[in-house]
Length: 640
Image (cartoon, rainbow, N blue to C red; front, side, top):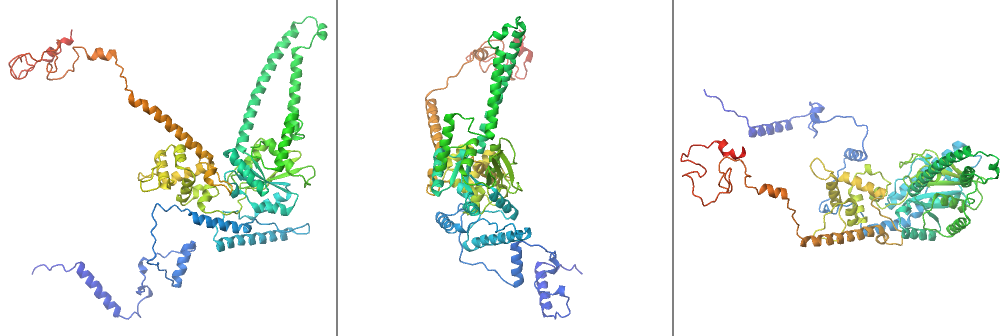
């Protein structure tokens, strides 16, 4: 009997599975275990894992699944978005509508107020009232975001920091609000100015525009006129520039002091030698004073001048000035009290402005307290350190670095009150703008395309190419030749230039984006926001300088390359090489032909018309074709 053929196969397996399914469907399920029920779940492959925490999206989907809610995608409502249009920025109409909403809801954007209290209020009741007021303030901002669909900047949600602000305002006579010169309106809180006046009408507000060295004189003048029309005192200041100037002056003064000391030592040595050589001490009384005494009097006068400078800067700052300088400073102060000036002030001028601003009664008799308030990373601590002349306050860009306010005395009649850095609520169009302004941390951003696209719209193409030394891809023929570069074009060119590549050999765009954003925040890529009545494109003189430099460079290159096409390069002939390569007996020692190239070993050039020596190979001197000539005979001319 033969071997039975195999009856197993794919077709038979499918038929068998169908038959088994039909038989099990007709059977009663009353005796089956719950894990054997065919209820749509594959119990053998379920991942039974305890879930105690879920994200908001997972929680929503799990709740919808339990409720039996199904989500069906809308069909025939499809909109294709190209990759080039994915920039994440607002259009012109959307930006105009959002700005209109910002103007309409400006009065709702406020800071929390401290509730009323007096000496009879207990500490527990005051803390509870502060918590209730703070909670109501936060609910108001949440309603503003949800009902009006507005985007607010991240603001301080810790009540303790606001308590520090309340105490600084209450004990300060002059409240100085420090803002960034590139975008003063974003860092300015108008409700803070109203709250200062609510606490006391005798308190004064000043806006200190830091990093004003990034602005030109015309830009500062435009901002001075804007704040003057708004009725706000503004002062332009640069903590970095002033600290550099003070350090340079201190270095020069130290060098001069060392030179004076060396000169005094040399003069004292020469004077002592003269005193020893004099033989008549009685005649010294009638003689004119010696150089030593003159030097001593000069030294005493120098010490008096130093003591006057030191003490006057603390007690009476007007005494060490000359009459002309004092008149000029008083005129400047009176002018500053009437209208805003656009010049950069120095540390001494800034202190004089603080003193001249407050004219009412102070909280402490004979002492003016100046409260410094501002966002983190606007130069608040740097301003205090520059005014004091040394590092008294630690500098940090992280909110919450300073836990409590600090009082620092500049002079016996001047006290600076340092408030912790507070991020106050303000309107903003998008998160890309918050990243570019330094409000949100760059290293924690999720999507780099919107902020880089915003930079490409603000910074022209030729400025980006000049700053980084790159060449961005030009627009195609069917595109606008004057359009700004896309984020992908900029990041690709920057990545190739810096060598930021991924594992697949493509430019690392997220890494390049972080570098460009940090340059934008630090001011290397400079963009200055104008006052509301000025066009932003007309408020960027620094970009015009790049354009002028570029045109000048192109003209220089064109002039340099023009004569180079007409002139021929003159070859310099070396006499040593000419003598070596033109001598008769120079040849390569090769096996085979020696006289074919016109030379024969040990002789001069051989005429090509001479008859061959034998039949076959012309270099053989005999008729035997198979006999080889010895090498020593070929090279015998080299032995001589």
